[in-house]
Image 1 (cartoon, helix red, strand yellow):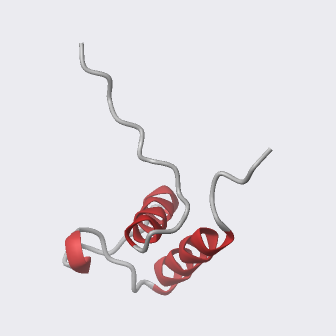
Image 2 (tube, rainbow, N blue to C red; image 1 turned 135 degrees about the vertical axis):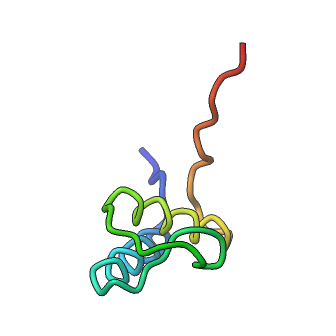
Length: 66
């Protein structure tokens, strides 16, 4: 089975996790929001950054419209 995420994408997530631990990771567009404390939010930000850089990351799950 092929990898869903590229190795470089997981590096972006690792970097986001480190920034969260140091208290440097901020939420919102361009990091203008408050400090991120949640582990899940840090992972989401890391994946989002990887997506913006064009790395292999699956699309976000969108809600189904009825």
